[in-house]
Length: 406
Ligand code: C2E
Ligand code: CA
Ligand code: CA
Image 1 (cartoon, rainbow, N blue to C red):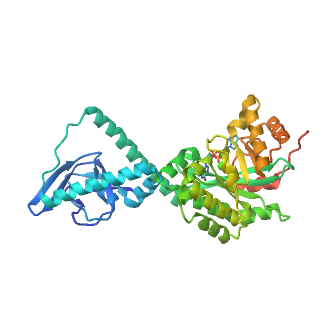
Image 2 (image 1 turned 45 degrees about the horizontal axis):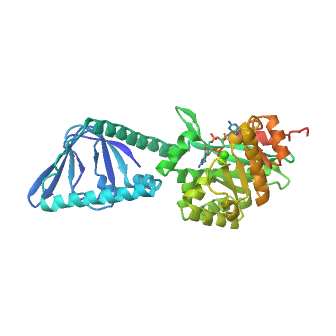
Image 3 (image 1 turned 90 degrees about the vertical axis):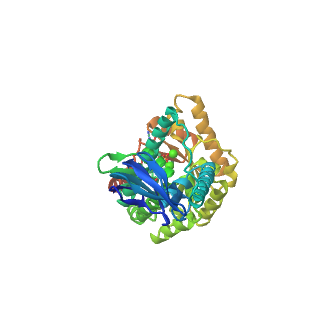
């Protein structure tokens, strides 16, 4: 995990020959870099605030090629290889490839200096605009590391919890299921919405751990919820899965282990995926979803209609539900185009034998239209906002199906 460390003048930060799995960004102070070779000690140079040192450790566990020593009081931001790899695994394959090639070439150059005692690389002229650019890049990079550090802490301290939003059946007004939505209960900043931290979790690779924790939490309360419903009723529980989760070969086994552990019925569990998955991991996605289906789980496509993937996948992917994006539902009363889209999605669902959920329903009038169109389920503030578990239990106990005059 990345963290900040202090060094006193003369302290060795990196020792030539040692194995290392950490790189550093200098936040404060200066360091010197020296290489011992057959000719003696070669001073490679000094580095000050904002410099990156020890970055070769991000490539492999080869021995350090140089020694780095603090020249004065230093404050260094540590970046460990696991953290780096997690971030890299979430990035574009081209970026990963470039990173690997550039770092490997750089390692070659440094090894040549070490073995031949060649002079330190010549200094090139640095233009002021380049410094400014690197300042802002440095700022962004260190901020990203600090933020993910905070998120790692939040996950381990259970500050990320699920709120649950009921999803109502249009046919009889009963509660058909729930969607688990992540919230960060920050000790100082209060409630942070997922729009702020999910992208950070995706970028840093922390989404994996967070999703499994969410899943664990959602599954653990199913037996209790079933009891509240009584009469053998089995509402579904939806959990959101970012597309990068599907790069994980063991995903389905991990999900089914969690379900088994809580003696939860897989048919009560619904994965919410987005069309992005079908574009980013088409094959892994297809395979994983087929395995989920085999085990009895359900699959919903979230935010349907906003993506730009081909509709062909509706035929070839094991999908049960389409969730009509809020943007169409909330504008369908004013814009014929949106209404047309909602109608088209419902028609498409019927053709493919899928269920539909209309998202973001806030008005009674919208329910009437959706009812008329044959939408199966409604999710929206009209009936309930996402709420913590304690409130959800009260909500279930007090729920009376709404009456619609047709
Ligand atoms: P989403 O999956 O489309 O979730 C529905 C969002 O619409 C939720 O926002 C919910 O609070 C909001 N919503 C529901 N009904 C209404 C309504 O009537 N009016 C309005 N204005 N909004 C409504 P939220 O909770 O802020 O979540 C935002 C997004 O963050 C989610 O969109 C989902 O993409 C992502 N997200 C949330 N939790 C998780 C998670 O555990 N994992 C992943 N990967 N993504 C998550
Ligand atoms: Ca969702
Ligand atoms: Ca959605």
